[in-house]
Image 1 (spheres, rainbow, N blue to C red):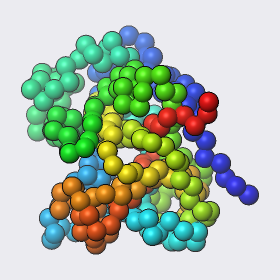
Image 2: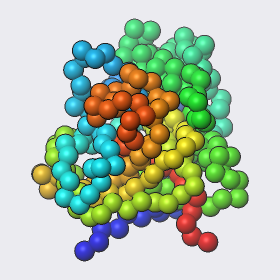
Image 3: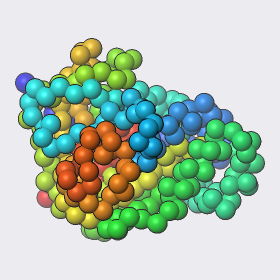
Length: 285
């Protein structure tokens, strides 16, 4: 039996729009709802591109990396997939409301007051780190953008992939998920490569409302859909990407420690968390 991984753009956009079109201004309410969630989101999401000391123990949440040699039926690997509760996750704002709120590190004192966070709180640290990731210069060959609304995400994606291009979107989907976040998973079927000329990956960042770090990296990148079975019976249809050229990456990138490889010596692959989005030109005519 083949488990289908469906890039259903219309269904996903409908779900996102349900979050987006909220009554009146809800930004402060979202901040209150996501207080306890923001710092945990920060720890999970920032690890993916973090630089760590060689003596620092590896966080179990870093069990998302692999190499193309692992892409074979029956391969077993320890993987971390965070459990995400949409009811407690930050929500999308309408574009006009998101655009009315400053989004800049220089405005952080104002924003902390706006969202009622103290300057020494975990939420303040999360917001500061999000601004750092959004405002730091892009790597060589990278285009990047922080989207604060669905409209801005789609506008920028179309700017990269083509204004007249129809889009498909891929995500990681839980078919059956237990409370166990880290366990051994086995690849059930031959991983299927999604052949696309280029793609835009959008990663959630910790913020009182939904913010996505979207980027496109030049060079050879391969997108896969992979069927996984966990030792606890979990079933996941996962989206994953392989960056085939890593010679320009920082030598201290955590992926090299996890995989025990050097920049340029091996492609680096990773699974996408469940709340990340991968936009590609549609394969349908």
